Length: 553
Image 1 (cartoon, rainbow, N blue to C red):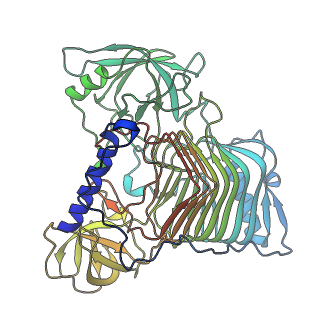
Image 2 (image 1 turned 180 degrees about the horizontal axis):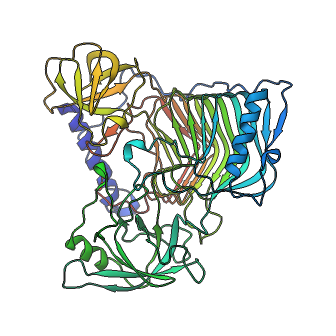
Image 3 (image 1 turned 90 degrees about the vertical axis):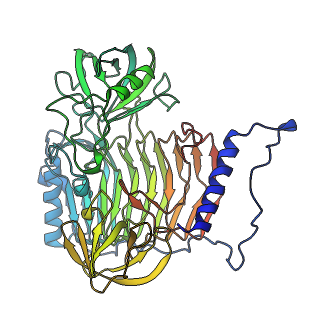
């Protein structure tokens, strides 16, 4: 970031901090904010118009057959209905069918893998009101962060054109493998000895015996809730991990519904870490976490975060996901990647049905890794998810030059986090997002290095690194309308250009109701290539940033 950019950033930060910390003056008016000057209108910049309209082509009418999943073993008595649906899809592909249709009822999909829909054109997948309950074992003892690519989702849909899928409920088997549990703090004990301070949680809403009783009790995160467990509240939270297999801290079962937790204390033989996900554990954190809780506190204990997923959409065109309810989902509800283009999400609800199962998506609800743009999110409802409600961006990475045509990955997530396609156009920017005039093509990877097709600049920037963008990706062209984000855990991020957000409700969000940024860290993520031409209109913002601390950013 050049000095003038840094100055503008600091001024904006001070102004926002002042907005939250200044006391009202006489008559209720805000005190003067500490702007140095009024910059006024930006000369030469046109007024924003938002996203231009575009059409999403429906499946073309044809005389193809209708394949019924029930003819392939799809049944309420079957526990592996995913395989039955997969067989129906294989038959539809073989005969060129126009549709696969399910049947009303509640069906268990406890298969080892999700359902793959690949390479269909002019095709409809009609859930016909079916409720699919998923459960799958972990693919790894601990999921590597680089492999979190949506390939383990309930539905993996890629390379389809003019396709619709909808009219169904997809849920997770919380009776056997709950994603979160409601709890009350029954006791706290701060000990003089290191790592012996603990919190006793009484688990509620799980009957007489918690499904994990006698097994590992994963605590990836705890979040304060209201007494009825229907909303988030201010208060202490604990964050132990984000990937499947990270069990959190040392725990001890006291009864079938009571567990003792030692925050920030590792349990030998249980903790497994990888990459940048390792958390800091220490006696100080242990005592501080216990001291911050008091008897009677109500919390949501999350047992899951990233991993698996609901719907993975990769490289589809003229695609629609519609009329879907997701009461709970392990991981992202919808994950977007590849060359996904011209698609719509319509009438989708991601919200718990019952406070006893208090989490919807255990990670982001809608997460764009990258796409080729033109997306409509229409009439989406999000409530009680665990991460961002929407995160629209194109992923990039942070690098330094180590040879004339070789870049070393600096971002701790590693080379697999970036993964451009062979021959994709790439560009280097300085750390402040300024173009430096170098563009080339991606030529491959060797370990944690990236190869390019032409010589790199002579020296690294003063900060020692560049930003490397995949210029074939462009999530620009986004319409978000008629959506409700209520009791939202984090934020709605639209880190793309040419966007319209209209007729939406943002109510009681823990983090920013709406944020447009270009940002990165050297450890966790690099998301957002820049944002211009955004229109926000006819939206309601009510009681947002419920739990953000003044000065946190």
